[in-house]
Length: 456
Image (cartoon, rainbow, N blue to C red):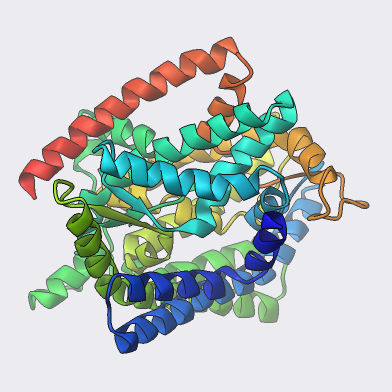
C-alpha cells in the first residue's frame, strides 16, 4: 500500500509535487493562507520555467551533439538517459518506500541532538540517497545494508548543506538556505581543497572573471564598458556557444542561427525563473526556521535545504555551466576509456557546479578550471557503472530497455561520492582509502565553514 501511495505521489512532476509540499509546510509553520498560496504558485511557476527551459535546451542541442558524433565517426556504446529515468528506477525499488520516513526521522533526530542544523525538506531529492541504497541492496541482496548506505549519504548531505550556507548568503544575500542535492554537495570537499590550492598558485590566484562584477559597478554608478561586457551576459555566451556547436555539427546558416538564438534564450530565461524560486522561498524559510527553533530553542541558525533552482539566478553559475557543457562534449570525444556521449544529463552541469561557483566567489575562471577533472571523473565513472545501472533498470518496470543497450547518466550516474560509498559497502580496499580521504576533506570544509561563520 505504501508503495502504491509513493507511485501515485511521484507520478506528479517535481514542479507540481514540490510546491504542494511547500504549501502544506507553509501552513503548518503558521504562514497566512494568502502568503502560502502565493509563494507556492511562484515556486511552481519558477520550477516549471526551469524544467521547460531545460527540456527545450536538450531538444535543441541533442541532435547537434549526435550529428557531431556521426561526423567524427565515433560510436558510444552507453546511452546517457539523464537523471529522470534513474529517479524513476529508484522510486520503483522496494527500498524507496522505507527511505523517505528513514531520512525524515534521521534528519529530525540529528537536529534534536545538535549534530546538524540542516532542515532537509526537499523530499523529491531523497531519491539521490535511495538510489545508492537500491544499488547496494541489488549488489549485496541485503535490505539493511541498502538502508545503511541511504542513511550514510543523507548524513553526508546534511552536513555539506549546512557548511555551504555562508557561501549562499554571501553571494546571493539569502540567509539560512543552501542546496540539497547530492550531485551538488558531493564535490564540495574537492572544491574547498582546490580553492585553497588556487590561492597559493602565482598568477592563477590573481585571475578573476566574475560576470556579476559588471552589475555591481552598474549599481554603484561606475564605468561598465571595460570589463568584458559581452562575456558578462549569459545569453551572449549562449549565442556564441550555440553558433560554435552548430558549425561543428555541420549545420547550415539557418539552423546555426536558430540554435544560437535558442540557447541564448534559455540562458536568459533560467536566471529569471531561478529568481522567482528564491523570492518565493524567503517567507517560507523564515517562518519554518522560526517554528523549528521554537521547538528546539537551543538550535539556532538552522539551514533549509532546497533544490538548486534558486541558485541559477547568479550569472556566474549560468556562465560556468554553459562553458563546461561545451568542454564536456569535447572531452568526451577524446577521453580514452570513455563510452558516454553527454546528452540527457548534460544541462545538469549547471546545477552540479552551482555551489562550487559560489564557493569560488563567482570566479568563473576557477570554477571552469576545477570543473574539468570533475567532468573527466563523471565520464569514466558513469561508463564503468553503466552495467550496474542497466541491471537495476531491468529489474523494474520504470524503464523500457528494448533496443537501448547500456544506460547511464553523465553526472548523476558518474557521481564520485556515490561511487565511493557503493564500493565501500562491498569492502573494496580502494574505496575504504578514498573514504578516509573524503572524511579528512570534510574536516577541512568544516574549518572553512567555521571561518566564514565568524566573519558573518
